[in-house]
Image (tube, rainbow, N blue to C red):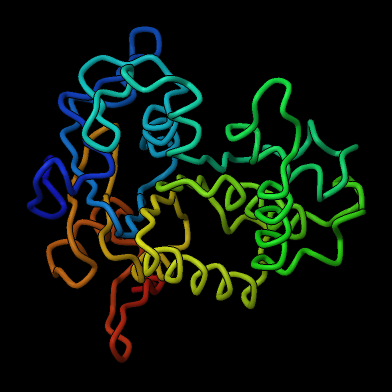
Length: 266
């Protein structure tokens, strides 16, 4: 089932797809997805392994060929120049740290400023200010002179999150941003996302942590390349769809003003 998350005019949409299809060989990884993601919201994408979650993010950021239509901020994706697209939409991929292990954390985060730099202009005061701000937001400023390869997995992930923030994009796409983060830093990430949304940013994240995903404004439930449900976090039908795609091995239960995913041991 394909469903609009929130009724909205094109001027209020961050991302929109019509008939989005991605094929890999003879197999369709994504199948005719119609989707609208409003600006200034946090949308979490969840589903079992192989559902097409990462593929969807890669299409939205312009990294994969596709059939159908993808619109970024009301314009077809192909009408944005690569530099403009890189300024408007920032991307945190899975396992993207290894090629930068020899760089300092500061230099890794400065890579996020490349869309704002000309070929000959070099790094500006604004670039350095954005990098410092991003490092402080992610509590990674003390490691700014350390090589990325000397950091733990969780520390690397926070530096890569800082690189994403340094872009200062309107839309932030994150693929498994909580990988290697311990519970306190997962809580920090949750608060940071809420701050970004309060500033008018749009966040789209692929999460395996279903309980944390249920803090998002809206969720997209993917399975076998199809949208099984898309809706607000408080919708009972959404909760049932989540349970269905995970073969009823989890149960969504209320806890205060939120919901948690519990293992179903019965």
